Length: 200
Image (tube, rainbow, N blue to C red; front, side):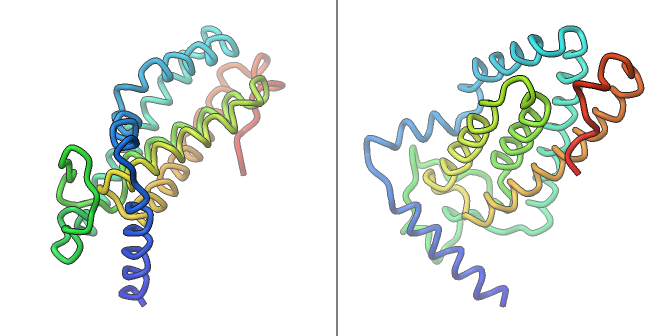
């Protein structure tokens, strides 16, 4: 069964990775590069400040905790499963479309980019959706685009990305509920109407 799923994952990867074009290579590389998104993160920070003011400092603190948990757990899973990235897999390496000849580290399951992106997206949606409803489609689009870029660049299989997204969503749920639980106790009068205990 595992072999069948792995084969399907490989074939899906080759199909998606094969949907490339010279003009898309550099944009996808830039989309995947995390530091290019600093202005976007700053924009999210402004939204947090607009809604929470000084209480937004707690959001920033918990966001740091969230990304640390998401990123480090993804690295632990990579080391545990030790699944080669497409560009390091001898059977298909010659078929993989790479950009700038970047193959990524040796192991790829799960995708840290996908884990971190979906973790941040979910946490921001749950934190801001009652005031900024448009944050939901924006964050979903951002997380999906950033995750897809990893397949386009040839450094992750679809299963790497899907599992990474699920890992990120799990940590977002845990950290958001912890944040909401704490805020309802630190600011019971101010948070009761604006901050629910989190998704259940």
